[in-house]
Picture 1 (cartoon, rainbow over the protein chains, first blue to last red):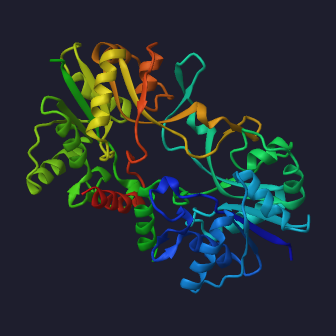
Picture 2 (cartoon, rainbow over the protein chains, first blue to last red):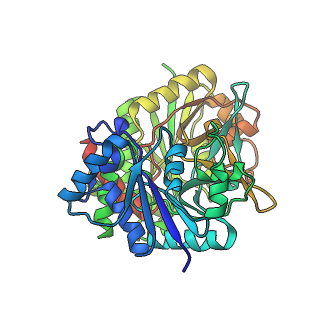
Picture 3 (cartoon, helix red, strand yellow):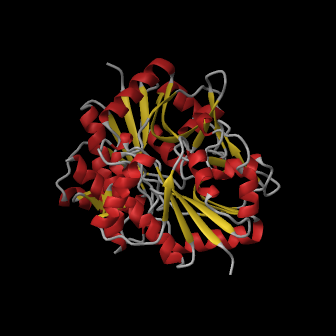
Length: 226
Length: 226
């Protein structure tokens, strides 16, 4: 059996949601978003060790929510850092082995499927990495330094999602670096360390819930799925 | 008063929707999508001349829908072409003047706002073109010819939407070309003719309704807007 870990990054303060509650705690279908996300990883496998990073001040809120919703999935909750990179690194410090695989996933992407998670672990086991993505549906233009812009060939680009799954030996090596301003996700960290990135198919349904309107969309997605 | 035209391209066969009805005719909030879209342009101004392109065989269906829904907005409905480029060109042939502005818009983008339409006409009047776009929220990777891929700076890219509005003299000149395989939108046609493209702000709400799940999302958007 290969060691499998998941670091679920739930760092948002919720300020963009126009809500008092951090966005990962807002309920959809009667359950906080983060609980939906955790359940998808648990549905994939009872054997995956789940680490959740939260802003330190939100951990008591989370504990209270777990009691309120009688949510008793075994997960390790730890304080995140000032940035996503630092939150992932905090999660990684909890993993004592270099033997196995780790998936990093956004706490506010509750529509990830068990098939996507499975494919992510299996591909990373084979190739070292598995980064979920989708093709672009829209035309794309690139801004140029002179203020002009030009069309680019959209078929050559992919929009990146999570899960992003890696062999632990690679991932730990990659995270020994200082944080760089161009680290927008884990793939960019691993690439910076010189490792190749394998892309796998995500889904347009696998949205990252951000602005307030996504909450309504998410409620609807849940209703149509059930 | 400047002449203002809108070509609303509604060409889809609906085969991707898993529905018998073409997608532009599917109802959201009790009204076919295309009627919502037309109403937004009419709300912007009573003076804009609206041309709708539809597959020829769908025109009788549209006429029946107009009777059913008592939809009596004055629009010119004409047959589209085999491609989006040809549909826009068919629409353009209905416009006898080179003096004024034309907005091209997707029939299945009903969440365009009157502010967006107004900004589009005003900007094109000043600069020659106005192409609606949004920044990328996700990380982006570029596929390379050797099968590898690499991160790109997402802040340099924009996802393109409609409306795309142009001065008629420019637009007519641009559409004298033969269709090229890299024409994914009107901006790419105008750019190919050597004219610069001005980008303006769209909105993440201004979605192009495509797969079946978007219908549910759209119902929800309408409910939350009312």
